[in-house]
Amino acid sequence: MRVRWPDEKLLLQNRIQNTVPLLTLLFITGSLAARVTTPRNITVLPGNPVTLTCDLDGKAEIIQVEWNRCDGRKVLVFHRDHGASFTVGYHERISVETSSRFTLLEMRANDSGEYCCELSTFPHGTLKGKLTLNLQVVTPQVPSSSLLIASIVGGILAIAVLGGIIALLVLCQVKLQAEETAEKKFDNFNAKSFTSQVVQGTNFFIKVHVGGDEYVHLCVHRPLPCDNKPLKLLRLQTSKADHEKIGFF
Image 1 (cartoon, rainbow, N blue to C red):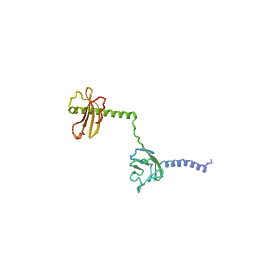
Image 2: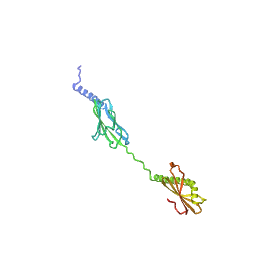
Image 3: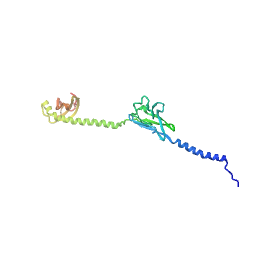
Image 4: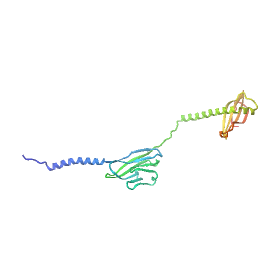
């Protein structure tokens, strides 16, 4: 019986078919062995520090890392043997942490934009990455008109109530002075309205009902607390009517 050996051409084709998938697998494995990873997007408040990273995912020797704005403006170069070299304007603003990451110490408006990193490695050659740095704009909260009106009205009412209490306290302390000045006793001594004037201390102008249809207007001075002096009746107007409004006098 005659033995038939395989054709050499057929053997070569089989070898090529078996080799191509292996080479393809080796190529893909080598391509995925190292790649650059970045945060892609970073948002920072003005004035805050921010760290930019361009890390190598895989085994490789990093020889040099170059950081640029993607529009071509240089930021810094870091060489494993020679250290960091900063572009003018960044020297006092950057802190280098590792070969592939650095920190901007204070975020400014003109720092926002795209940053490109370029890693010179062995054995993979040059690898590149990119990230975007965004400035977070803080918008102050403006209170609604209803809240604003309520706060204003509340403040006015608080001042009015406080002023009324002070006016009553003033009357309690100056009634005797008013009677001595008017040379008569008052059956009633009730405050109806008042106004005040800030001087070296405070002058209170108080409309007081003293009985019947009679009113008096008082000008009472309250010294500053540091003066440690009592209230003093400065002026008194008698025989006033109800319709006469109190004012400065």
